[in-house]
Length: 434
Image (tube, rainbow, N blue to C red; front, side, top):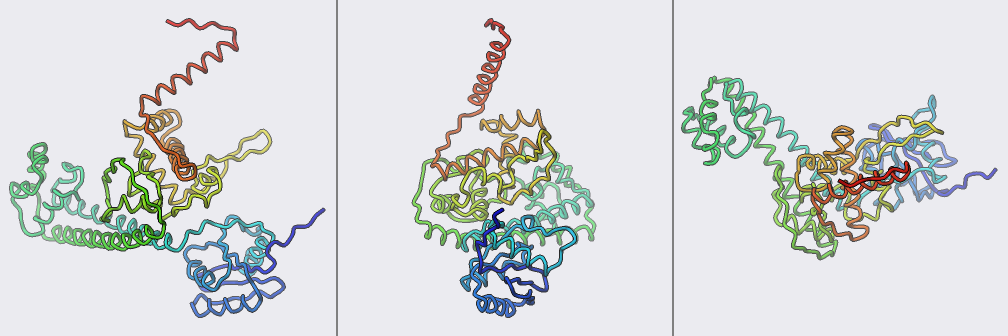
C-alpha cells in the first residue's frame, strides 16, 4: 500500500481566533500569537526562521483578512481554505489540534484553495458591499417614516407605490417644514400623479399632526437622508476604483446595444456602462435580468478573469447554484444544501426579475418551472442558466441573441412533438394529424 506523498514539505497551518492564532510547523511544538499587528509581524518572522514557504489558514469570519495581507506582503504563498473542508474528527477539536490538522492535510495536498480576488477587486468589493449595507439601513428608516405617517393617519403608503419617491419625499419635507394644507401638499406631486390619484392623495393627507409623531417623522427622515449621503460617498470611491481598474485591464470594447435602465438604487457613477465594458471586454448586460448595477456587483465579487474557474461546472458549483446530489447505491438521499455565495445571490435576483418579464425566453422557462416545482426551484434553475451564459460569454466569446418567448414556446412544442412521436413508435401506434 503506497503512502501519501508530502507535496508541501515547508508548510504551516494556522487556526485563527478573535484573540489568538495557533501556528503549527512540522516537527515543532504549536505556538500561539496574539491578534495584534505587531504579533502578526512576529509570526511572520517565526515562519521565516523555520524556512516556511506555504501557509494554509481557515477563512474564519473577517479575522483572517489582516493576517492574510501581511503574510502575502512578506512573500508567503498563502492558501485560504474553507472550514468545511478541514473539519477535525469529533471529540478532537481544540485550537492546537485544529492547526496541526490543517497543516497535515495541506502538506499532503488535500485542501483546496478558496477563491481570492486580486487586490483591486477586493477594494471594489469593500465599497460595493458597504453600499448595500447602507441601502439596507436606509430602508429601515423608510419603514420608520411610514410608521410615523400612519400614526398621524396620513395614508401616503396606501396611495403611493413608493413613499420614498420624489413626490412622497417632497410632501414629507413640506410637512416637516410646517405645511398642513392638503391642497398645497398635493401640489408637490408630479402632474401625472395628481391626474391619476389626486383625490385619494387629498384624502390621505388629512392627518392628526401631533408633535411627538412629527418628531418621530423628522428623526426617520434625517436618518434616511444621512444614509443616502453615505451611499453617494460609496459611489464616489467606487468610481475611482473603476477608473483605475479600467486603465489596468487594457480591454477596449464598445457595442451598439442600448443601455438597460436601472429601476432601483442606481449608482451615481459617470459613464458606468463604458467603464464596466472596458474592464470586462464584453457586455454581459445583454443577458436577461442583468443591468449595469448587476454587473458592477458581479465585478466586485468575481473580478474580470473567468479563467479562475477551469470549467463551467466548477463555476456553477462555487456559486452554490448546482443542484444537490447525494447518491448511495440505488438510493438518492437528501443532501445538505451548499450555501449560495453573494455572486450566486446576484444571479438569483436577476432570475427573480424574469418571473414577471414578458419578453425574454428565460422568463417563460422560469414561469413554466414555477408552475411545476415552485418558485424556489424555478429561481435557482433560471439563475443557473444565466450564470452559464455569463461564463460562456467570457470563456468562449459567445454572443447572446434574445429569441423571445415565442421562439421558446416553439422549441418546447417541437420537443413535446418529438417525444410523442418517439413513444408512438415504441408502442407501434400511428399518429394522425388533424
